[in-house]
Image 1: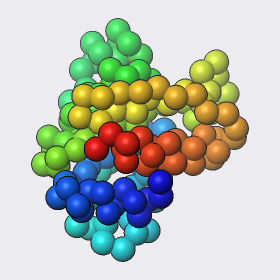
Image 2: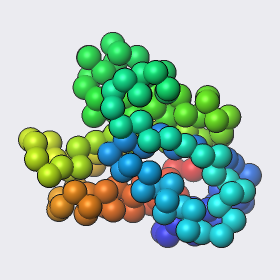
Image 3: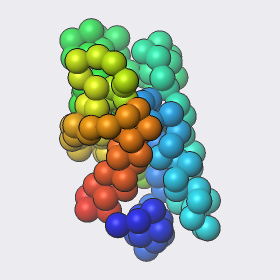
Image 4: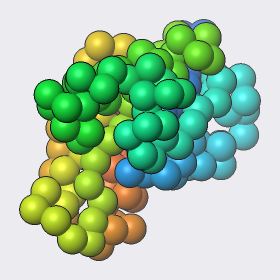
Length: 145
């Protein structure tokens, strides 16, 4: 699936999407806005890179971060819920992960959408992990919306 397929799917179902991105730094929304007509389905979103931003702007619970870690399906779910509530969308997306280049869990990325969550492990450079995350997310959304 391509970004255009996702936009067309959202249009066909009359759904609005909002995204809270961490490790992808806005790359997901940037990929979507390349498609004409995205404004009909994308409410907006935010890059919540540090834990305090996740807590203060998205309503992620500190206890969730302490219990599960900032890169976890639980945090991704709370990010998705928070951005959905803030922007009034039908679908909330949360993305959090380790893009690298250093650390034990480089390439681990957690994605969430409306209560669903999945963790994927990608390889490559920081940019390759980000690009692979965006590509995976578009496919995952097309399969689960």
